[in-house]
Image (tube, rainbow, N blue to C red; front, top):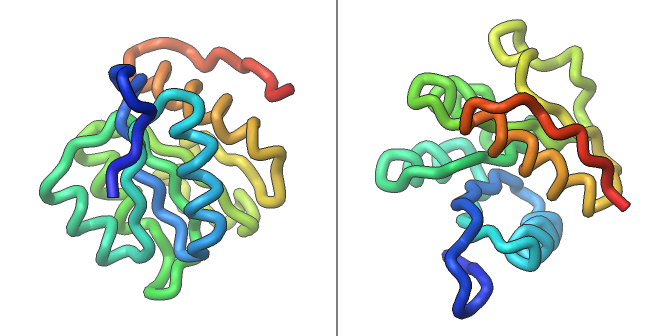
Length: 136
């Protein structure tokens, strides 16, 4: 399911890996409203399959999914050079050392902070430093 605002080119294509359907829908709605195209994935296997057929500008990853930790997806994203961030209730200390440089936003969070972190990850992926814009 690709969703983006009508009549406008997307600011970027975002993979959202979140196994809680309502949260995935909320993330999608907020990111689409911010001008992004969003492709949801609900498991590690779903995300890896999607990555095999489509390129993304940024990925948003929940850490604990129904079929296991998301780290194989993070590994693949790192291999192909796609920036990502973790959006999770799991403590940042649970992130393996190899991914501790990724942005992290802890649940619960202000939903608009998600857009700011996605923009930071997108900016990083384009060779810039994080903007550190705060959510309002």
